[in-house]
Image 1 (cartoon, rainbow, N blue to C red):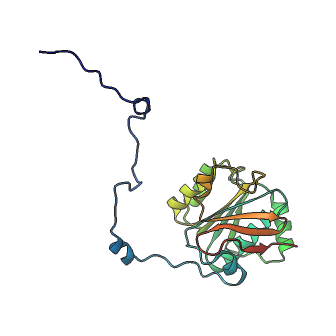
Image 2: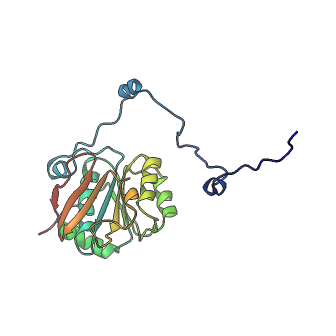
Image 3: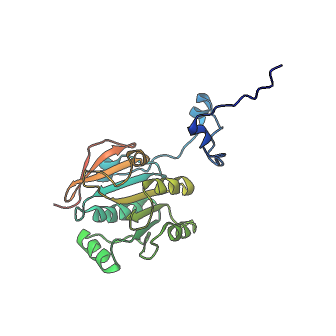
Length: 223
């Protein structure tokens, strides 16, 4: 009888793999039939009108928009205008501003020539994800703007995607451009945004990706 021990071989990648992974809450084992999926009821898209409908379509109430541009191209001005539109028509907005102080933000509103909505709040002190989530935990807001992703100490766009899933609300993140027409971060993580907006030149925003409307639409912020 042969009592020789047999040595099992495992590839290095398997031997070095983590012993366990936590998939709790991911719904990895949940499935739904196509028939049941078609029976489900979902919230209608936001009924944007005018220039906002032409530019963005009708976004889901829980959306993620990533905006990138080089300095001075108008991304913050665009976001102030968009935040005010949401606050006037669709719900309460919190705008985390870590790029500018109160004086410069007020000057931008003066430049826009718009009256700020009472449903639009600013926070100039929450400069990290923990502080931002404490504000969001209040449940007061339906929309959140983060200016900027980097200055608020988020790792990348993926962090905002996780917040979108957690809070079921609309998020807009401003990201530094990488000098090549995109955001600083991996292409995979940029794809997690529902809409990607790029400023191709000062004052002109263009949709590069849009799950709710057309791609290549322009929005003139200033001329």
